[in-house]
Length: 235
Image 1: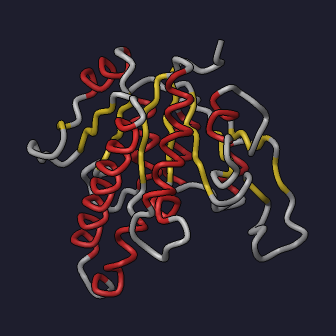
Image 2: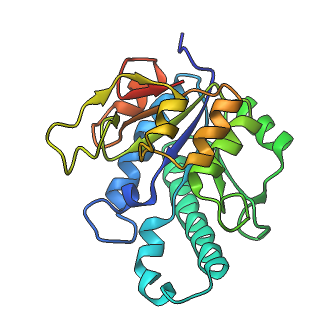
């Protein structure tokens, strides 16, 4: 029996680019969708939030001098592109999937309605939450936390390019020490750059655990869903 009945999985947009500098790598998308599909077949209800960095990076230079709100709206639309691509991959693997957007675009996806999202999950559909919160100045980390709390997920799982939370950047410091478990307060007080401070604070205030783990290791999504001790637990 899986330890979690319902999880919210946050995947960065850059993860979908694979070896490309930006854009979507079809093989990478299909591989990640395959891992998510395996978890779904175990009976775990899955909500997903995908970042948009892989799409937005391609236009970031043009957006450099833009108004922040305009740039954020462009980033939100980038997450919709990723959500549609991931939906297609999951459904080709036999997992019924719904994309729900915080910005209404009826011809493309369903509008986000909390009760409808929970109903989809109860019926065994994967739900991809796109377009952030629809508000500028909020990251997809915050959107993932908000959606996770709204659908009563039991954990926020953040898949990253490192294998957990460290006391300093492990890519720059060879003596960086990894935490197996760390408190919300320590993450905030030490400014450990793993997740937006607003997202961590929201999880702290609502007692929502966060699992940070390495997405590059094949099978880690299943290991996380099965409660194996990978990455770092924030609680």
